[in-house]
Amino acid sequence: MKLSDVDRDPSEIFRKTTLLEFPATSQKALELMLIRTFGIPSAAAVFHKSRSFVHAGKRYDDTDLLLKEYFENHTESNRANTAVARVNAIHEVFSSQISNADILYSLALFATLPAILIDRLEWRRCTDIEKAAFLAYYQIYGERLGIKGAREWKIWDDAHAHAQAYEAEYFQRSDGVEELVNQNMDLLLSSVPSFLKPLGRKAVCVLLDPPLLEVLGLSEVVVLPHETVSCPNSLHLSLKP
Image 1: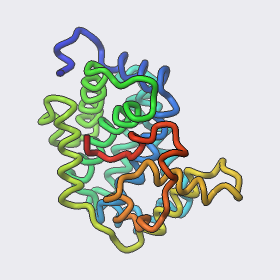
Image 2 (image 1 turned 135 degrees about the horizontal axis):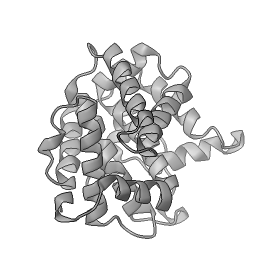
Image 3 (image 1 turned 180 degrees about the vertical axis):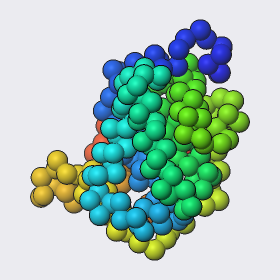
């Protein structure tokens, strides 16, 4: 379904679903999206060289705050415009190192992972209208960031297929990825007591699919048995349907 099939503002639907109905799961999708990009060697190299995850929380907080400034305010407001300008300034610093293809892949993850995670962990699945709104919202956001190619996605499934194809072609283990993963695990488990962190690490891995675990060097982690989780048949956060 395309958003043009319904007479609704994509930002209204996006905010209701991600900020009001499923805020925790939508937040988790952002965290897992950042980890997922480490499976692309060119993206992982930029993070590693920039040392942006030496203090792992900084980039996550920057990303989270800038996205919220855009999402939680009218998209043409001064605050939203300032957030977009700041993201563009950050991208400009790394423009010689980051390809449009990698950024387009990240945009596809932004547009699809919230719905995937909501479908697999929440009490109901995303509707076709919600998925269309996610896609339209991020297409507009991508255009404002100068990302080329997102308008080729006519429906949500196109963005999903794009991310799958990109991973199939480029997923590969790269030098330094273990450091990035460990720093991000520390961030994800920052509120977990020390004695529970090993179990927490396994719990995070339950949400990652085998190809991603392999390229991140986590394939040796023994994940939680299916019988210990509430949704045994649906927890692996694979991009595959």
